[in-house]
Length: 488
Image (cartoon, rainbow, N blue to C red):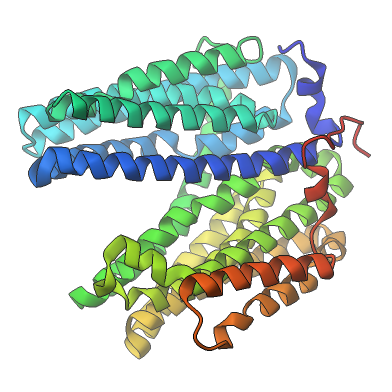
């Protein structure tokens, strides 16, 4: 185990909250930077490969992405919870078994992907590319599993640095191959050297904290796998209704507009998971051992999430047309109102993520499953009805309403088990009022998109400060204000 007592005990100290806040913003910043780097490299790559090879490249990576999704199976969230709750030899045992399962599942996923590519009639280069990218997947899965220890210790700065390093190395490798005039196959093998470097760096960082030798203890894995499968089904149900909305739209033009808006939301929907997930180890540790601290932390994370979610909704409302124009050009302008509508749903998803992680910390896997299945069934019906009533605008409204269901029902589930939760949400009306004030540019004439977005942000920040709606924990998280005193 780590010799650093601060790392060992951080979840029991007042340093945990500021570390989680900083870590959440580190993860989001790393995501944004990574997306920017990826967009630049992909533009050069498309120009180099041409239309045909770009299609082959995307096809191979899409297949590997499916294998990656299957290889996770909810292990990341469940693994962080278990490593946050357990200590000593039991924690080490769980970490070793998580590593073993992840490697085996990733290897099986790769083998199935190669077999599918061969049976589906992919050409020899593409089949070889699937195999090479699959090796990279196994390396990445191994590295990602080791980072679960860092997440559970709230060492999220290291997680962000390693993620950004991997993305930067990927971009550098792609640009180097372009300069060398490489053909398709070397681009599909880029994940192997990048995965090796990321794995080595991660091993150096986590050495002494968790075992580096994988294990497969069936007595331990049985209960763990049941949790993982329940959570995996719940997560799948939470995302399927968006795809159902797409499948119900018959007009090709409407489908194109909705798909463009959906793609932007699909990227941004990862932000609440990163932001709230940073505090997940605290939820897991305090959920049963310290209910008062659990409720306190839950309320503060809710405030930060609501504050951030409202700003994201405002920006999609005022600057969404700019994002659509950059991605698709003026011909996709009808997608901008859809993005503004779904931006409201994105704000709700920030709040829903808080309750989802809280229920996960409480080991309430069935509650999460029932909640998400209910959203799936209700969302499917609602999308169909509103699509008939108001076309793609109705579908956008339906998906937004569905995002509010977990935000409302999840809060009620937690309030019943923790009655004091309501008192910890007292700052919410002030945050909502600040959001309403920030929406004023919507009624001001002759403002450009950029002007409206800037004025809205200024009004929002000013209102939050004037109303004292910013949680003090955000200020405590600023550099130079760290503390490691035992938590009350």
